[in-house]
Image 1 (cartoon, rainbow, N blue to C red):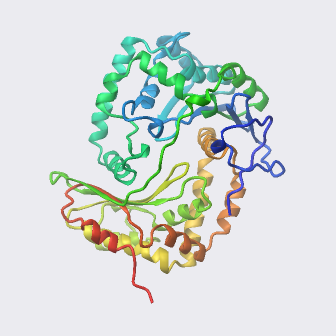
Image 2 (image 1 turned 60 degrees about the vertical axis):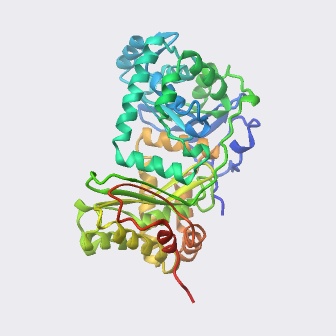
Length: 463
């Protein structure tokens, strides 16, 4: 059953089909959450509470998924340049203004969403909206600042290449979605970074940062009507160009393996993932529950046989792992579900055997108490997602971008209540049983079984 998205519209206009695939039900809408769509397609969403500190964010449908091989990394470059000032306000003036307001501004870029957010007093929300809108409408791009940030990005690229986890998940996307936009790194390549300049970046901003890709989010003691006025004043002048609508590209998954052997590393880092559905899928909640049933464990936490997760019990009692983490990475229309673990080179095969054994139990012998424990953990995670204005702002922004609405906490709890073991078995059987995985590994990976053996471990002979 598709999740119900609850929202309230002050004004509804026609948007591209992929942004308006949700169904809104005005009757049970949460009283403190409202959503308005401006005439040019900009979405404005607010959640009202009594806090004097507000969270404001500008969400943009942008990232490496919407880039080409020649400009891969430019969205991340825009993130860097956002702190360098605007045509109407230089960097020193921007820093002084933020200091005087006591505001904190942050930003991040993923494969399909870019976020500029700020934490400030409620009285300073209009100023903060102006600053965030200037990021896409008034970026200065001074030649000196551009060269400095290009150098900083090269250093960041070197730091990323020294982080095993970052490299591993880049490899995982590259092999799982090879030949598609999702395979590209967010940070880009050193060759591309060198060619970025003011004219290149300005042309990219004009072409790709269209109004229908924007969502302005506010959480705090904010009046929705005022927020709409701020958005109309700062972003209402933007005119979308249908000819510039960027495509997400294909999402072809390839069962494959990529290894980078480095025997000088103390531990092997391995990730195994399967193609699953994305954020708006009816299987989203079941996939999250299954992720929690595998769980996360690290060697320092102890517990031994008292761990609630069977895989954690095996890792602790047999000492075959330093750390493991089950993950579900959902995108708009596709996702990766799997596990990442760190182990000594002689324990990699044993750990992978235990992982696949746990996965097969999910498909065949899932117990109701395992489902209940995972559901309770999910409830806690959902509650934490809206703890504080900044977390709630991020949650509201993601739901607005992906679903053009918002699902309340009570509705998510109600949906979780309907998850039962037979349905979960069916979802796991659909996505991971007898399916080809994508495997990425770096470090001393000589002990990792070859791909055909890993593939053979994804089914049990059943009568």
